[in-house]
Image 1 (cartoon, helix red, strand yellow):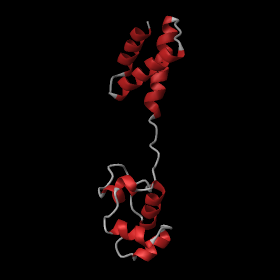
Image 2 (cartoon, rainbow, N blue to C red):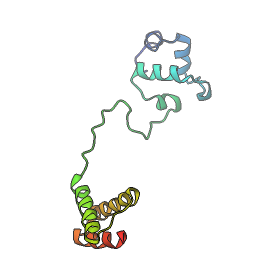
Image 3 (cartoon, helix red, strand yellow):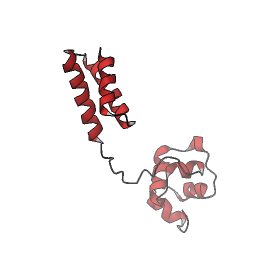
Image 4 (cartoon, one colour):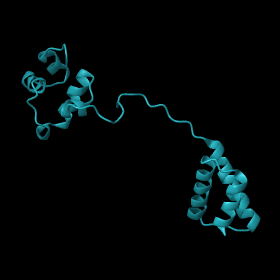
Length: 129
């Protein structure tokens, strides 16, 4: 809100000058704030709504930030699926989908932790039995 006149901010936030003056003079109680108004004012000044309301910066990332999706590390997943399939085939077993998913997740986690595939396979065979 720094550098912006109350009338200009009121126009941008589709609010009244009196409301904006109350915000600027810290005369607003959080329990009386209407969410729509809070977001309009925050958008008008390019600020985080939580920071306007509480005076503290959010521990949450900036909601206007662009989030790049994280690439999925498929190698460990592929290996986990292969190890579970191999363990089941070797023993001629089938597992219900939820149990198979559980064993695959466990295999994946062990691979991520750095356990060698041969040891994971041994573990999976015992878990599937």
